[in-house]
Amino acid sequence: MIEEEIPDQGIRLRSPDAAEGGAIWSVARDTGTLDLNSSYLYMLLARDFADTCVVAEQDGQLVGFVTGYRRPRQPEVLFLWQIGIHPDFQGKGLGKRLVGAFLRQPGADRASVLETTVSPDNASSRALFESIARDLGTGCHVKPCFAAEDFPEAGHEAEDLFTIGPFRPAALNRLVS
Ligand SMILES: CC(C)(COP(=O)(O)OP(=O)(O)OC[C@H]1O[C@@H](n2cnc3c(N)ncnc32)[C@H](O)[C@@H]1OP(=O)(O)O)[C@@H](O)C(=O)NCCC(=O)NCCS
View 1: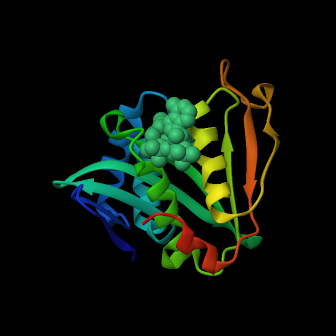
View 2: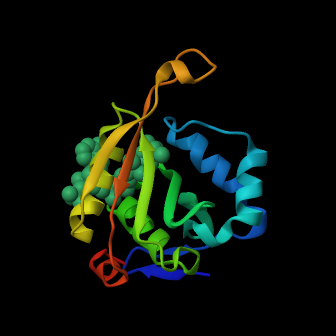
């Protein structure tokens, strides 16, 4: 389990407890922009994938989260599924710190590539991952992953695959903690 404290902000970064899936769902809802999945899915993630998830807590409230998993057939790849910061806490460096904690947690041990998908018009998310690649001193390769028409429901945006890496474990020390 990871445990990091952001100096002066009283924000703690840690693995979620098994019972915190509902609270993660609430933060995802509060972002207003994330694809909101069923609460049941977030509950399963907190219960079974806590080693590859991190939450940010302030005064007992979750204010951010990142969820992901290792690709079963490519364990060197850590896939970041969703990151969400409560609107009151966006633009203050918390997203970068959460990704740093995500990459440093024990469940990410020996991973050398970070993958995620981002929709083309999500400027903040694209900026976040480009910034992470710069800090790690590695490349950020972007290619189409899912087209809008791949989604069964109308109105879903396309998703581009961001591949960041390879990076060495020592490079993780360059990410703010
Ligand atoms: C995307 C998100 C996680 C970023 O987290 P954040 O805490 O706001 O971002 P940070 O303050 O850590 O900023 C990280 C970098 O992105 C840049 N950035 C952040 N928001 C930006 C914006 N709106 N436009 C351009 N750049 C932006 C910052 O300048 C910083 O770059 P730098 O390191 O070069 O200075 C957050 O805005 C969010 O939760 N958005 C809603 C949900 C979402 O879209 N999630 C991503 C899809 S899974």
